[in-house]
Image 1 (tube, rainbow, N blue to C red):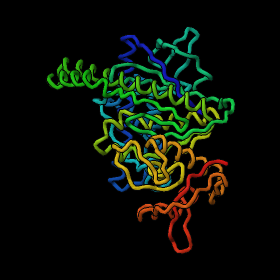
Image 2: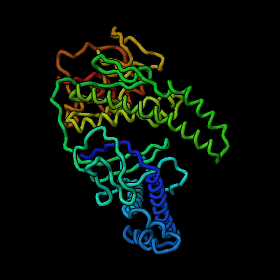
Image 3: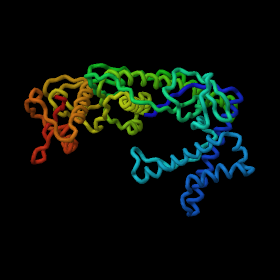
Image 4: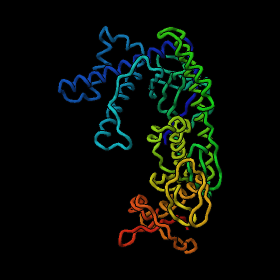
Length: 426
């Protein structure tokens, strides 16, 4: 397993100039390679191979007066910039061919010198860790690193990053072995929301921190100050950095909070189940700012990565599973409920909290899928069988239930769907 360890670095003024040159040269090589492939495609020529492109835009370009200054930076930086271009093209081709998971990937685009974040990468032959605790980078020098922890193994590469706020970081890639935690008996289902960030099936509730909402006043004043500065002036550049620092503080605080809570959940539970939310779709609604502020996607990725690292089980429940409308006591699916309805009572007489009921249903559905390796129907224990209820599901519910009876319910011979049941581990 590979992990990244990020540390703050403090280059001297001379090293900052050398880093700026390296950032610029890496950008130029990337753009030259992209332009060469665009020209070859326009002319109807075959795709330029990686080795041929490297010779053309790096080795031969250094011998020309227009690109002679490429020799002022390490060749490792230039080769890695071109490797990023190759990776971008491979991802694009895999996406077009349908071999790559996730959303479609666009072809690589030209990099701009006006971008507020820059990075360069060194492999093992371009950097080293000195005995005095400093990081040596080729043709840059020894960089001061603030070590917050020791690296678990020898890094295979390091990426030096300058973010929008003007801070410098060194990101090391290290190889580590999995570190299984002692097994525990508890499993949990998580319902993510906005009123409460997360409600767990064991009764715990995590309040939403709303970092962006709390910082809106400071951000608004910084944005107003930026908008009043003349474009291209030094004062506008200073105001832009202030805005970037304000946003960086919010992002860092949110990331730290998500790390702490995700670690706690993984440490205390053997299996974790969450709903497979369509975050990108929710980010296009009127709740977009709150959805982005919550950081659901980052939280789910942290849970998944830490579960793999610490030997826990993590799974996502189908987003079409009616966790909110399904009664966790009798299994009846009720009508749709608007967001302002936070509590409801089932026909069986059970009073439900909206989020807690959803978390319990997510746990039950996740356990059913985990224990049922063959994908067949999971029967309920005799103690969980319920008396028949007269309420019939709606037509939309009937369509959603067909084909996933292992989680929602059964379909009889005539195609009518009976009310679903909550499946739990026996």
